[in-house]
Image (cartoon, rainbow, N blue to C red; front, top):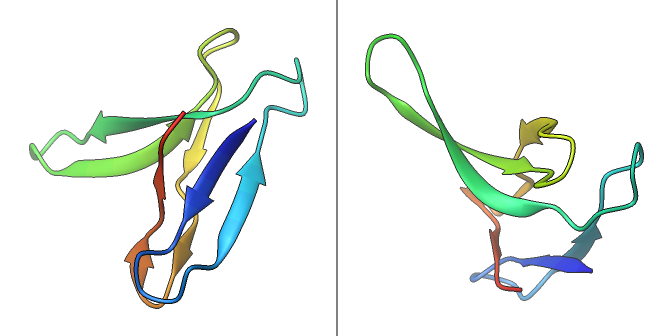
Length: 63
């Protein structure tokens, strides 16, 4: 299970894909203007969501 943690307050969230029950992993989406946005993506079905955030910053994931 992927666990996203806040580096500021230690809040943690487990995240998996509801479609295929695979743990989400960190990834980046590059926008047309070159800006990179952190996302959480499913390595199996390639679905992706904006990564969870806490205390005004993106939460990071180590699996």
